Length: 239
Image 1 (tube, helix red, strand yellow):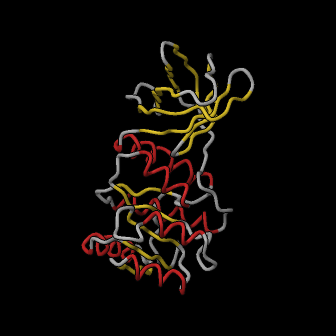
Image 2 (cartoon, helix red, strand yellow; image 1 turned 90 degrees about the horizontal axis):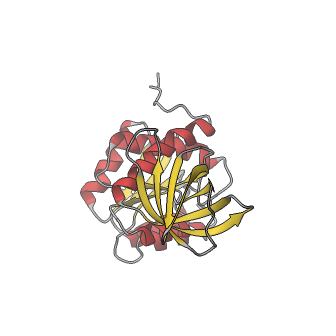
């Protein structure tokens, strides 16, 4: 596990909660409710992971993420954004600024532990904004009056490569229904076609998805990412 984590949130009680959970998992956690203090700390100290609240007095979490990615000490440190946002644009900006994962409010202990396990593998991996997983899920698409169906080739928190029976032009806005598990209710999102490959594949960037669906998508992807980086899902007690 990461041995040293910085938690930044302008709600002191939330800072204390995350710090307590991390400490109980035998992780050294430092917390601050001041984003200005966090900016100074991040310039001077190295961390194995950083948790940032999106909404804070300047510099907010997105600006702090930009500073981290431009720094020398923590440039490749995994960043987890803490958010209760439903605005997909804000979440996209967070990823573009350098965030690796989202931790949705209200904070859940098990989600938090899973995220920490993922960051362990990412410390040794090349920095990337999105973690794609090769997985085939049923997809239904609609743009205007045109409907299409197919399956995902790969899937990430903010997009997918789709193999479908009807391909839309780059720039098209599509309504997407994604069935993560056969027979289970679909996740719904508005997405934009960002590229077309051949006659039957297109890359989609998710632009708007309900917060609850975003959380479900992350919960679905995390175990797959964990398996990919060969990290056990459960926390092994230390002796």
